[in-house]
Length: 143
Ligand SMILES: Nc1ncnc2c1ncn2[C@@H]1O[C@H](COP(=O)(O)OP(=O)(O)OP(=O)(O)O)[C@@H](O)[C@H]1O
Ligand SMILES: [Mg+2]
Image (tube, rainbow, N blue to C red; front, side, top):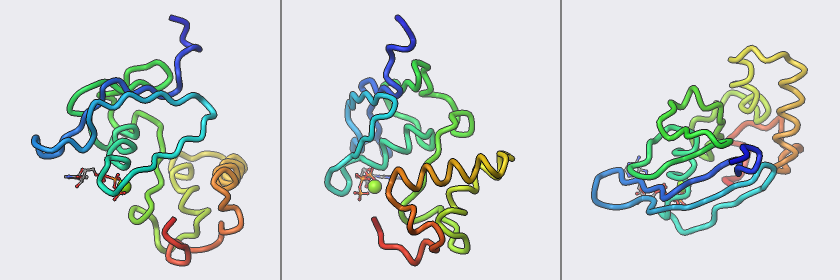
């Protein structure tokens, strides 16, 4: 198959159980195209965060495969996936601004400053938070 015809992200029959009894995610099939803006909407406990942490690699699926750019990343460790995740309530640095929180992983990777600024601006604009770049996390509403 032509690799460029592959969706950017593909979940195939992905299931996750944390306790071996209840399915947090059950047989999820999902395709996301490059440039697509996708929102997961569902009741609390329906598996939205579990889906995202499996994509980033913080959790492994109990069953199924996850492909990114046509490559099977199901067992690729989090630090080798190159996927970032900004959490809503935790894993944010309270002493850093919104912009600094987003820039941090790029700084750790020694990305040139100009590139960091450009990428942070792009990410903030994408989620319409550009006006709030200098606020601290506790100065923001939940969403
Ligand atoms: N680390 C964990 N250990 C055990 N069970 C978990 C863990 N994380 C989530 N769960 C369970 O998995 C199910 C899915 O939870 P998840 O957090 O993915 O839902 P969510 O859709 O993100 O909910 P919310 O809208 O409240 O953020 C729930 O039953 C939850 O209790
Ligand atoms: Mg959640």
